Length: 83
Image (cartoon, rainbow, N blue to C red; front, side, top):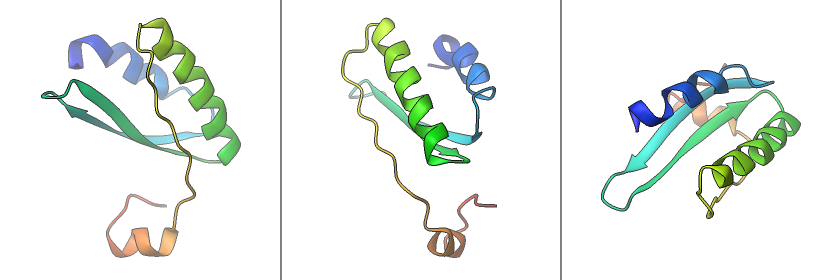
């Protein structure tokens, strides 16, 4: 995955409102994903739409994306990387 997606990872840094991403993968099931943090819900929605189309272009037909609000207080208790 590192060789295949390094350029993609670098390009994500330039997305509007992007703060961070944690990459996830399960080599056994050949699944991958990530948890992203954006400045606004609109930035997250725009990126999800763009990224879904990009993944479809890579031949990945099944993309599951959901947008959630951050619970700052509980995240801080568990050392979440929240500003």
